[in-house]
Length: 101
Image 1 (cartoon, rainbow, N blue to C red):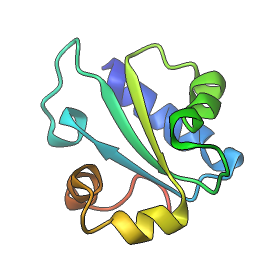
Image 2 (cartoon, rainbow, N blue to C red; image 1 turned 90 degrees about the horizontal axis):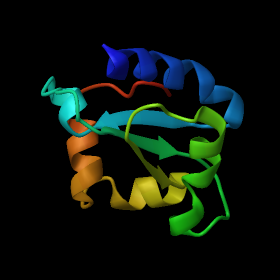
Image 3 (tube, rainbow, N blue to C red; image 1 turned 180 degrees about the vertical axis):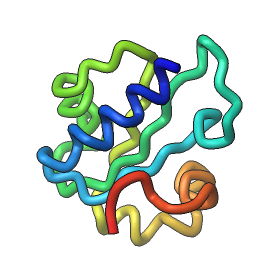
Image 4 (cartoon, helix red, strand yellow; image 1 turned 30 degrees about the vertical axis):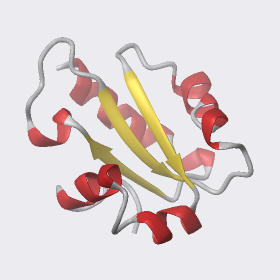
């Protein structure tokens, strides 16, 4: 399946960019995948970019062939919001991160 292939590629390609953690969110993580399912990826990455520009690096570098939504948090934001942000709660609730310690 294309989403699974992209997931493997993302996990391999993100660490050289300095990514600290990667979580999968959305329907993919709950095995509710259809042909039009978007791929939601939560990335913890140190950046000074404003929220609206943070995903640009990952879109440009990875050039995903499927609809992908990158949700990029700094380590500080992730620590602060992990228990209150619905997206982070859902992503963390599915198990271990896809990448990170």
